[in-house]
Image 1 (tube, rainbow, N blue to C red):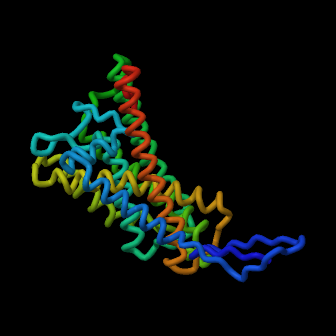
Image 2 (image 1 turned 90 degrees about the horizontal axis):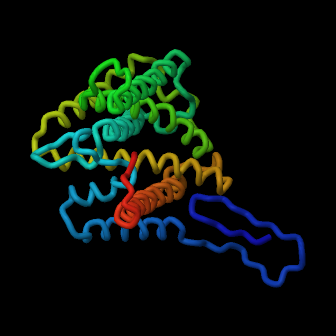
Image 3 (image 1 turned 180 degrees about the vertical axis):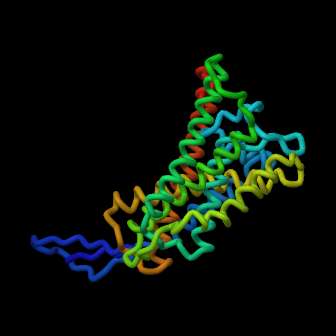
Length: 286
């Protein structure tokens, strides 16, 4: 039997035929390679020309049209994501941070049905506000004039809800000994995350130039976190490594891979947008 060992991953390939050579184990430095690749990405981002805010705009350009009338300006400069989308990803980041703060990072159960309904209501609320804004833009029967404050608030609630529903799904797939508890036990536990969402809302709407970089980083870090959670879940399933991790050292391999893939996806989408707009004259529709 030939064993190929990855740090944090137990993978065995068995062969029953004649053995030309026998190797007890072979260790491939997967995690150091991932850390090295991420380090190269961070250094490349730091050395790229332009201000930090400009580079955040470029990184987010592939997932957001960045329309000025849909965006908040701080110190005279637009944030890298529009109000609604920035709210979604900032809310997602708040949800992830809350789960770690509350010790629910390994919780593998969804919230109780009543709380799930509330969270799904937050997502539906964002969808309804977006539909109303679309109808208004095309001259349809809109209920009210769109406002960036509503775009941001509904996005924040939606992002928080998605995190509280998605992270336990990843936890149950990633951990062997995931905690048999819900990510959110009752609606009362939303008080803490709501305070953080309100802080993001107020900071974003303040227009203060000194908060441009912090708010912009919250938006983009949330964007990367959302992509990374989805990527990590897909990688765990594709590599058939479900329920393998028993400690954070083992969980880091798929999580770091998810972050690295997320960065690559954002760079590729941004490059594609640049090519489509300059070569094809296409208007980014997202």
